[in-house]
Length: 509
Ligand SMILES: C[S@@+](CC[C@H](N)C(=O)[O-])C[C@H]1O[C@@H](n2cnc3c(N)ncnc32)[C@H](O)[C@@H]1O
Image (tube, rainbow, N blue to C red):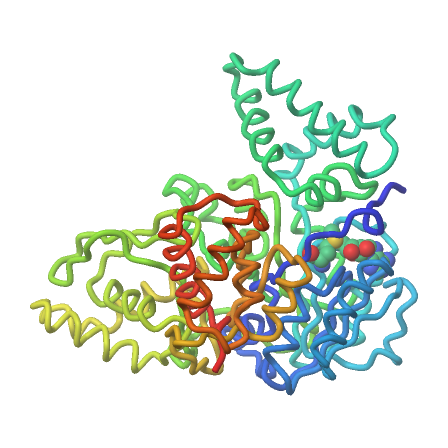
């Protein structure tokens, strides 16, 4: 079987969907008394370099983390970070999932298998499900991501081409270059093509030419890549004494996200799981992040909105232009990658603006409502102030799309750049070791380029912002950073990055 994990480190980033805080909150919506992330045990299977669980362990010092990974070189990278930080609540073991003994591992409140299930042979998949059954605590949750049929068959067509085009290349590097050459050849060949199938392949090629080499190699060229119908996944989980809880992409559970004809066409399917299977067909879904729990755990299938309003909230969005608080004219908020989100009700617009201002701090619902109402009232939108129900339903919809995050415990950090900024030891260490992504306090991955990485390493709390600007200017002028920029550009960039670091809780007192 071809695999590249020892040869080419898999880029493991923080995956916010897998965070125990997210899993705990989702479980509560379905009536599960999930343990708090602040005091729990987490097992990650196929943890690679630990880029996902090390930041969790750093932020959750009273919780315990175990990662198991087959590739010793990847584990060594993670272990170096753990040792340098002196973390006593996490261990990364070199091991084969197949060989794991539940009795030795013990019980876990959360079990994570991200990017593993589809990419291993049947026996390992079976073992992942068996471990989830044997090692989950009674109210525990397992997260498993996998490629989904029939949607993935479309992607698979490009995999077929790349497997063929790289069949004689030896080693990760040669395979990668052969794959890129093949994609470029096909891109040229299809430049004037108009058929729907060609347009699809053109889009896939554009996406893959920009993708990280590790993604291309592991997703398209590794020996194992198996996709399943959702119903097959359910049946396999059921055989192991597990039941389906929900998806981390919660909105995909609701048919209101489909077109009216699609809703009508599926309207007579009463069984919720069959209905969800049919929604996969309609969406041509390619990927799932499913949550499982013990089959004997009683679940509330109808989400209790009162539970939702006990959460604390955050949103990494920014308002574009103006928002009207006296009408339901939609305002546009931007995600970090600049994709747009439209929000209509004045209370919701005001709530998002408040979350923007205080990020990463997490108000509870009462505080969010009070601040939103005050802003709307002050702007003259008195008639909207009492429409609490509108805010709850729009906020829930935003949460189901992960535009707003819900937390069971508050994060009390306030944004702000001190005179002598200090980054967390974790961020400085990851920057020094050349990690391409560092974790925010809400476990979002923040990409760092050479400039940001250099700045982070300087943030030890001893230097003022102007001293930092001088240092960065000197590094740019000497060519050490391989980036160009005037003194003013360097100053602006330092200021911008410090604001970003503060907004994401990377700066500490
Ligand atoms: C595609 S990577 C995903 C890594 C990480 N979870 C992520 O999502 O970024 C799959 C990982 O699973 C590991 N793996 C594959 N088979 C394994 C096994 N039998 N036991 C332990 N780890 C395994 C690989 O070495 C690799 O690091």
